[in-house]
Length: 184
Image (cartoon, rainbow, N blue to C red):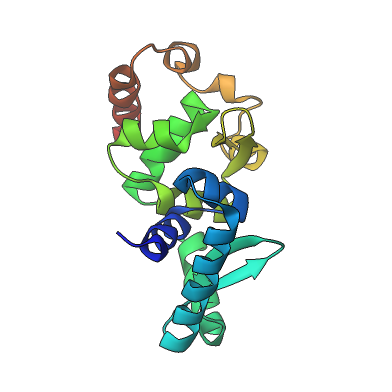
């Protein structure tokens, strides 16, 4: 697998821009090697004239949609962020509500699938917040105050069986409990 392929995969699954040092750390390479490969990858995307582009800002990189598709993408996202939540989104939101703060890795493990797109959608809708833990080098997710207010609660702890589900020892217990709640 080529370095450009690895970088492209990391940028694709990342929710936020990635710094050179973080990319270098994940791939156990020097930042200079990453920077050179990123410049090549950016040129590849530019010459491809496709629907995606890589942007660079303050030493951070992110895959984004091509500028010429901005109006189309804005209209799509408007529809996506105002419609009903899908069943997988509701499941992920329930898990975040009961287990938050929760890492993406733990959420993926509980659900059994990659939740990157679901997390992005929930962030866009303002239903969850993201915080980066420097010590663990992971992003953690919690529900927002708007989400709690929308449910008419004064605290996330007011959710049914919150104490029991928040403290559950095994992921299987949490998954079973949250799926039963979303089916009601």
